[in-house]
Length: 179
Image (cartoon, rainbow, N blue to C red):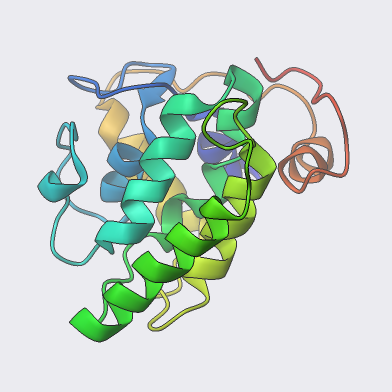
């Protein structure tokens, strides 16, 4: 269970960041790079993502990340290990069309941010084409921990694992100890 602590305590923030601090502090795409085992890099646009990442999916993830509330943004954490799924140009175009169609069906996405609808679009787009290589919790935790650097204590876990997982899945309104 302690291997999962670092993922539970990684905090997703709006925008791009120089380097993750002791509290986590990156956008979803920057966290995905680290979880993939690549050196940390700042991501201002999806074009800066390594080639193994799907551009349409990372673009949607960035839009969700940057337009979400603090609590909504943390619901993106389970997707961090799934974004490295680039595929053929045809599949990438299909993902792009899927995302565009899904979002255009939601009349409120532009004015009143419909996070849950965007999250459903992300889940659906991730089901198209190649899936990211499975990454165990222990490996992801190790990579995120390494990004914090040696000598930086990881934040103590707040709340229970089951509570946070229920919150991520939308089965609970307010997570305890997340904020």
